Length: 66
Image (cartoon, rainbow, N blue to C red; front, side, top):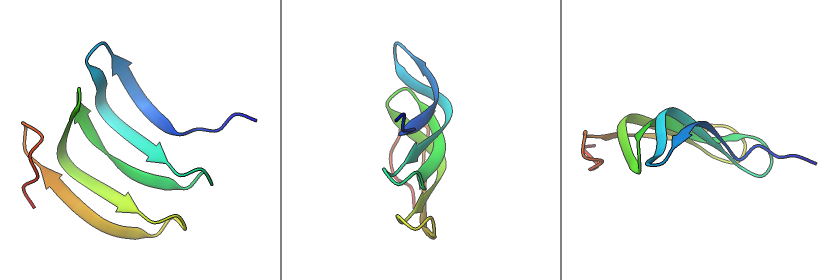
C-alpha cells in the first residue's frame, strides 16, 4: 500500500514552494511555503483528526515571527 506523507516540489536545496505533510492516517498535518530548509510565511497545523489547531508565521530567514 502506498501512503502519502508529503507533497511539494523538491530540488537539491530541499522543498521549494507550497508543501503539505500528512499523518499516517492520511489526514493533513501541516501546510505552508518552504524555501529549501526554511519555512516562510503562514503555516497551518492540524491534529490527527484533521482539525485546525494553530497557525504560525515565519520570516524570509525561517525565524518564527508569531
